[in-house]
Amino acid sequence: MMLHVAPMRYIHERYFGGPACPKCGELMMASESSQYLGRCKVRHNWVCDGCDYQFKTLIRFTAAHA
Image 1 (cartoon, rainbow, N blue to C red):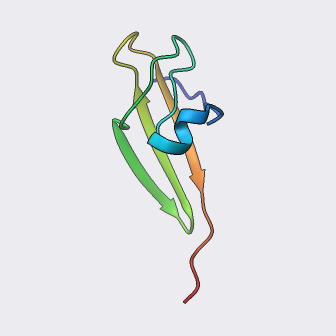
Image 2: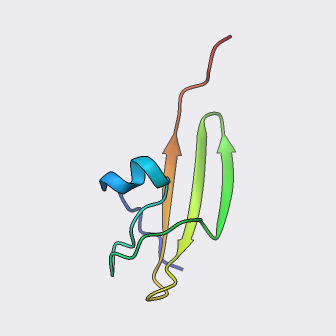
């Protein structure tokens, strides 16, 4: 499995939430799996349907305060 972290830099990601494959550019709609890594971090594991390239993204977010 590749340990490459792909930056989320394409405009469509803002609307659809998934990255494009860093190898072939195909739009990814859903991750293969996700892991909660603790406070405010989620890792998504992606596999491209077009070229089978595997990569990971790490999402960091701030906790909402009531």
